[in-house]
Image 1 (cartoon, helix red, strand yellow):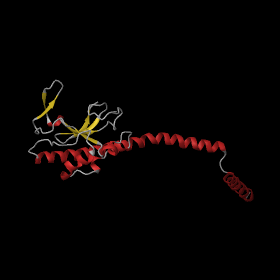
Image 2: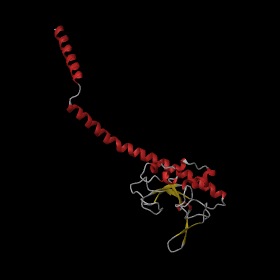
Image 3: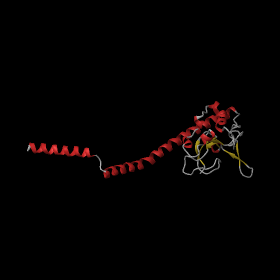
Image 4: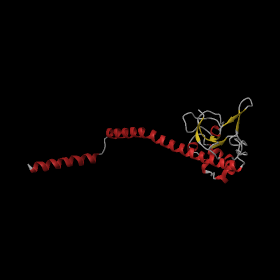
Length: 202
């Protein structure tokens, strides 16, 4: 009886060794690849969402720092929103942006949004800044901001509703902006004159 058991064990070991030596069949290989493909398809969208969420958080942090620098500059400027910020057509847009606010802690890295540099727009590469300064309130005093609307009327605008800086393009959201205009389509991250950051547009 003991001899039969030993023979059975030897046979099983031999079968396993033979199976190991012959490797995978084509069918087994295809099944394995199919399973790996399904797993990748399940995991990849989640990884993409994680990347996008981290990019958005970085962008909001950048805008918060830009807003803080702008408000410090405002305080040194008699409580008036800075003038002389770069216009869209200015060559070296990012360098001018940096020159104006670098004394208040703004750095070149702060002007780079990871979602922008990984998009088809890549305004940082083109202009040196992923963000656009809006000139609606240049020279206005905080607490007495006036927005010029169509028809030439001036409308009082609370600090909390006055956008100072936005994404060039709506790179964080499903509706993408396709122009450099601040009024182009797409929701943008923005910093407001009271220093808070939020999504604007729609």
